[in-house]
Length: 112
Image (cartoon, rainbow, N blue to C red; front, side, top):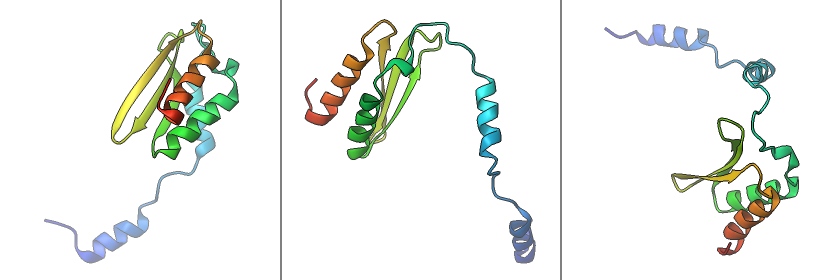
């Protein structure tokens, strides 16, 4: 048997929304991170290419995320668009700026 309207209203009023403790959330997620064992390092990438990729992907209604392989030896760029997701992988030893320039060109002009 279900709850009465009064019981539902009382439950709704006492139920709290999710916590806004974002600093705590970030601390918890960062506590699980360690040193990368591989050689891919996004801090070496030109931030202008990262911003440019975000711009061209979001301009067409997509989303993009940047990450690493599990061992930290490769870069990943995941693009979500039209309900699809594609992840691009680049070895840690590559010229990541040149690779990002190619990704940008593909979205910007349709040509790598």
